[in-house]
Amino acid sequence: MRESLLVPDAPTLLESLRAVGYSFETAIADLIDNSITAKASNVSIQWRAFNDASYVAVLDDGVGMTQEELRCAMRHGSRNPLSERSDQDLGRFGLGMKTASLSQAKRLTVVSLTDGCLTGRCWDLDIIKEQGDWVLLEFEEDELAILPHIGDLKALSQGALVIWEKLDRVEAGEPSLEKALSERMERTREHLSLVFHRYLAKEINQAGISIKINGASVEPIDPFLRSHPSRQELPTETIHVEGSAVHIAPYILPHLSKLKAADVVLAGGKDGLRRHQGFYVYRNRRLITWGTWFRLARQDELTKLARVQVDIPNTLDHLWTLDIKKSVAAPPDAVRDALKRIVGRIAEKGKKVFTFRGRSSDKSKIVHLWDRLTGRNDEITYVINREHHLLKALRMTIPEQQLMLLERYLQAVEQAMPKDTLYADLASERKVVEVLRDREFENYLVDLANRWLDTVGRDTEEALSLLNNLPNMEPFNRNPVLAEKIVQEIRNG
Image (cartoon, rainbow, N blue to C red; front, side, top):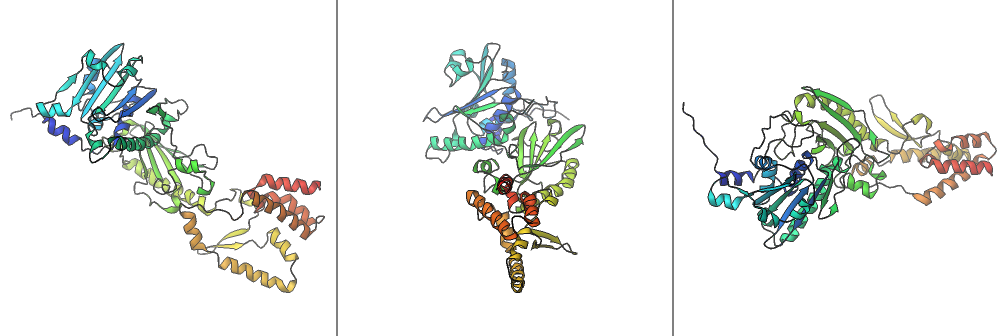
């Protein structure tokens, strides 16, 4: 059998690779991956929209490349995806920078600075089409000098500059290039804020990075609301696959009623809570895919606050079927089985944020206004607590012949509880608020306590028991500081 070489047609192959599926923001993210792999601390993204000189430039202060290293980096398939990589390397196929860049622009320029040496290479699809071959351009010194932001690169001790020109994919069908590019950059800011949030937040004992777009810092978006005091952390688990560790950390976000407007934005927005539930898979702390249960559970309204951080190393790329864009990953069977075992309890915890919202976990100390009863067939009933001190005090003021009317009224309230509507409202993105709030609620508690004591008598055993237990009674337990203050003022008075 004879052998022969069959080299791909350069214009045809490169044009086909432009349709891999990169969006503008995922393409920019791929460039940031290279900056992080190059141990950069700062990345500056600059863009300009001129008629004949529009561009996007990404500058970093990473280690840079020699002439030969840059030439190799410009080759499509510059590194075998099966080769062993550093545990901090975010690359995979040796295609990212080229494929991502040329998916958005017809001209890609890369300039590198290392050891005081400045070198540049360029792919231009128009020239490749014209000559029908893999023509890589090499810049002379005077040609480098006129490139945008070359002065910013020279001001560094080392680094790299990536420039996109001939932004045909951005311009396509757009009446205004400036508006189109501005909108894409805004989406890019949001995308980078989430995908690289762990780098932007500069986690303890981990390398961090600063990203700016036209001088404005990209702030991290934390989908787990780590700083919120009401967020629940479930036990973490570690799964070992082929000698590598996969770390799983489940979290339950606070109920919407406990979130400030800024928290809601961080969590994905009011309309995004349901879509963003599920697993968040990180490869070397870089977010790969999110908002999915991998078909191990349904996206349910009552589990929309459950989110699971899954950390995987790049040594398991072949098992997670990572794609070129590093935006899709599927768990291997060994991990999938473990995720399936824990997803049930994670979802159950998420449901309890709605089911038991506002109640203390130490239920034995709280005197509730409502009791939750479980029947023989696992049926659940909610009834008003007939032993609550407030109800006992009310009975003292009602003539005996009217007590049955009170009981019938309580039964009517229990029977008429709008369970279906309440379930739908709590499961929706809308915020269910209390009837009395803030100062109005505080005044209500003070008045209620005094009327209560006036009814039972301030010097009675019932009053003493009331004062001793007031901070643990509903509704006073919702404001324990005020409850303690009420008790002290009554005792001092």
